[in-house]
Every structure is written in C-alpha cells, then in structure tokens.
Length: 236
Image 1 (spheres, one colour):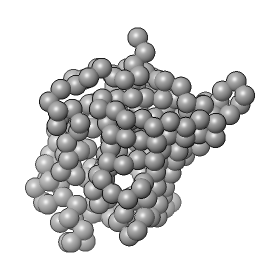
Image 2: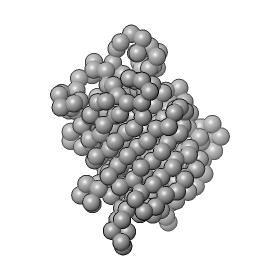
Image 3: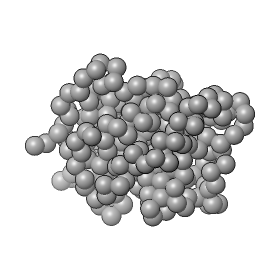
Image 4: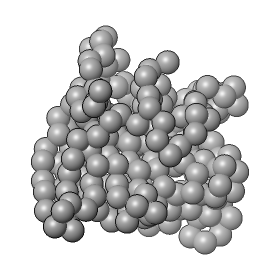
C-alpha cells in the first residue's frame, strides 16, 4: 500500500478499491469491453454505485448512462465510479460536480467541482479543465486528485499525480509536470486572493490511480517506468 496522509477524510474512503465487490465490478466492466462496448450497446457507464446519489436532481440508478451536461451529487457514505470516453472518475461522498460537454456528447471538456472530492484519470485528447471555486486546472493525459472544502472558504486541494497540468488562480499560475505526485493548495493569501502553495500528499493513493487507469486501458507513469519517485511536494 502506498503511503498516504489522512486530512479530513477516513481510511475507508481511500481503501474502497480493495472491496471484493469493487474488484468484481471492475473485472466485469473490462471483460464486457469497457467504454466502447458500453457505448455501442447503449448500456450504463457506471462501474459501481454505493449509497445514494443524484443525477440532475433525480435518484441515480446503476443502469443509468451518465452523459456530459449532467450534474452529479453523492450523499454521505456514498461513492460513484464511472467512465466517459477515455476518462474515468471516482466521486467520493458529499460531492457535487457538473460534467460539461466537449466536442461530443461523450467527450468531457470540463469538470466543474463545487464541493467534495474526485479522483480522475484522463486519456490524451483535446484541452480539458477541472474548475473549482479557487483554481482552474488545464489537463492533458494525466491522473489527478481534486478536493474542495466549502467549510474553509472553498479552499481547494489539487494533486497532479502524473502528467502535465496548467494551474491558475486569480493571482497565481504555474505548470506542473510530475511523474509522481505534485500537490498544491489553492486558498486565500494575505491579500485575500487565491494563491497556490505546496501541499502534502493527502487523501489518495497510488492504487486508486492504478485502478482507475485500468478501467480505460491505461497505466500510470510509475507503472510504465517501473519505479516510484518521492512525492514532489511532500512536506516532511
């Protein structure tokens, strides 16, 4: 198990991928042909749904197809794993986000997060973004973890787990290129404007990224290279 630090989250939220039912659901998804087969057969792109969730204000059911343009909300003790195109998402409990449309119905151009946490793996393609109340991330083919904390003035946490990400706030901008986790907080600075500051690696694990990458026939940077580095912004 990769090292991780808990900060405002619980261990079961990070160890979800170890559940037998989750592994069985993932194996079935891959065996049935993944996204391509699901799309061709007009069947659900939900890999697993635990607990209660809403889709556009209505109860989300496992047989539902999630499309771009949809708004997703998960309740307490709930989580949702789904795939759209060559991107996969794990939405944790108490999250609210909008999946906005790109060049087609099943191409995600923007993930707008209002609250909660999402682990996501994105295949290569046209420009995509993740937007929170305090940071915008322009992503390419990469794996990332994003968390929004409404009780802390919507301070956001963003980890570029691998790949290249262009991060910007109203006051700061940087390009993060990482093979093994480079993390930031985006929160108010002394002038009241959102600033980017280095962060610990919190609330997500290597195994989560590997699991999600496998759903879309991808591998993480450390799986490809066969080695793991030191988390780029880990603060001892």
